[in-house]
Amino acid sequence: MDARLIHLAQTALAVFLEALPFLVLGSLVSACMEVFVPRAWVERRVPRSLPGALAFGVALGTVLPTCECGVVPVVRRMMGKGVPVPAAVAYMLAAPVVNPVVMVSTWVAFRGDVLMTGLRAAVVAATAVAVGIAVRLMAVDGALRPGSPDVSDGLDACGCGCGHDHDECGYDHVHADPISMQAPLLPQFSTVQAAMLAVSATAFPDGAAASSALVPPAAAVSRAAQLHGVARHMTADLLDACAWLLPGALAAAAFRTFTPPEALFLFMDTPALAIPALMGLAVLLSVCSEADAFVAASFVGFPASARLAFVALGPMLDLKLMAMYGAAFRRGLVLRLVVLPTLCVWVACMLLAGLGVLE
Image (tube, rainbow, N blue to C red):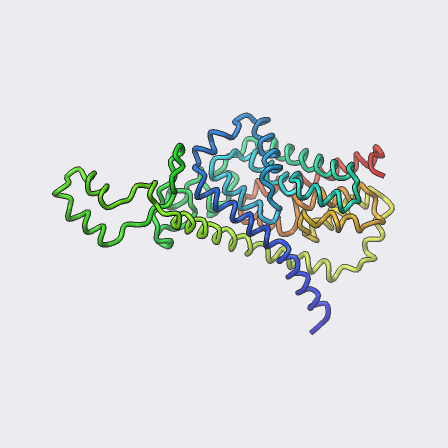
């Protein structure tokens, strides 16, 4: 077999395996949010004002760190729970960078360069706010793709917002009470229970006594049923995301394999060329945000402003993210998520280069 094809397969597998743990984590967080967090509870706590919603979204990224590989399922579920689109989008763009893990990795990769670390977080946070403002008038049902789990104000065809067919899963959904946060899943009546309900209808005309005798209260639902719900939702989100991660990993691997290194040397001397060159490279390489600072630091011949562009744009836009955006969101939101971060990062880095802030 051609050595380049072997390298292509190895690189694609490396990209996929690098992203997979964070995709699993994101799907787990998403599933737990669906099962344990009632929609009304979320709606009451998210600020309704635009500044508050944007601040909430960016600040949430510092306490709920999620890599860009797994943030899309979480944000899709957040929107289905009633989080406004500006807050959810701001969180989605900021969380992969403003969290402590990535901040420390950036600081280590650039050998204690506090300025580079701070500018990376600042550029990404400012971009997240700008995109959030651009989608301020967008409703949830105008943001989520038809057929994604949380569309039409959190209601899908089965009417409960779970995104799954009840007949397939074998469970009827009883969502948690917003105050008591009781278990969201109740096992479906067995055939025997249904027959007993029918027979006892004459003895209990109002049905109340029969129901209380045969159906356990929501507070008594076993923990196993909750864990089963988490597993089902997590599996659905993970399989959906992996189906879109694979093409992105293959595209990134193809670029790494077939692009000669000398092709990049032409852009090293001029920031006006180096910045867009490394921005494009960040999109094509699709490196995870926990590792991309080490890749950027290795581009020693490029200006610092170009390396900043690499680590700022990559966590918000790359090949695998574009595929996942297309799977989860409508075209209008996808276009904003592609165009606006690109423009914001380019303008910010060009301005910093022109002012001489980064040498």
